[in-house]
Image (cartoon, rainbow, N blue to C red; front, top):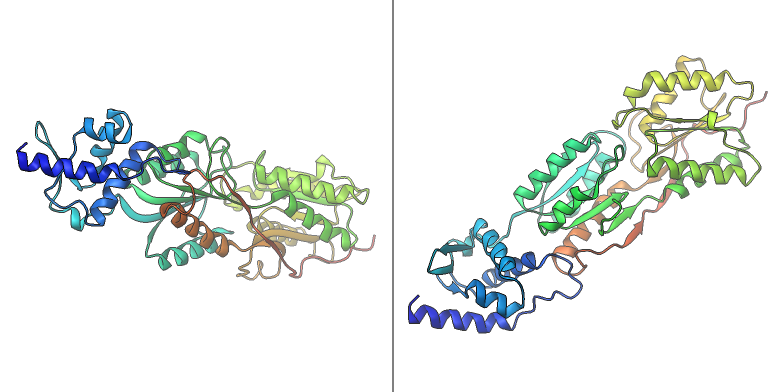
Length: 393
């Protein structure tokens, strides 16, 4: 390195020494913070094309970090096209840096179990609308509630180095923490929608599942119902357990039990309830054959409630004259059956907007990278036409 280059490197070292890498409240890995810091200096024009960065040893001493940490940051900056490393000479800001100051793909991603049914289209719309206000493009990943598809989507997003991921994780099987850790270890912020993943610190826009079940139960109790059946999409999930516990609490408050014979759990992990048609039909036939048959049915998901509505019609059972039916869904009430359903509702469009806002807040340093705030989602009611009084014996 020439004396002129060495003088420039010393000057840059002095400037970098004044920068703070501690990132108070920022839980991102140190290499990621160093990478962002140098990229920000390039973006601001304080590091110019052709200038040499201090050596790995100097940077390690400047920021009191390991040389391996520095090396990882520089490697990723090189992959981003911001620096060029010459063996035996040094690391230099590239001529293309002023046209390539973004680190990674400047998009937000949304990972959901489906993009066509239930809550998900509204969530997608809200996320897309809010991302547009902060000039972010978006990627949508439909996992079909399949863990392998979800893992593959995560690997691709890490490779693309997206700016953030909003995530409705698989429920059956439950999402393992290592999938989310893979995103966070690469400096990609995450916000959860509906449910979180144990062991992972990230903001959560949480559906209060127990409250949903309790509100359904209280609604039916007000209409005189005491024998209520529950149908959930999947077995042993946080959502299904929450709905059951809330419903059970509301019924027990008026001395009405929720027998296990009146609880049916789905047998597939798919978000498509039509795949459960045979098992749901069999459960309905068994419940309706009981001497004390249910006077109301609760379905944990509007598309499941629609399926039950159609199957009851096939069985010659009228809704709500013979049996009442309540679903859980979004505030969008499109479709002939959905618009008729009485449902506890969640404003999924607002959830999507808030998810994009939170990712932006993390990216701007307004919110800590490993923030674990739990933000309850507000609940509403669509009165519909599928709840009535208890039919006469």
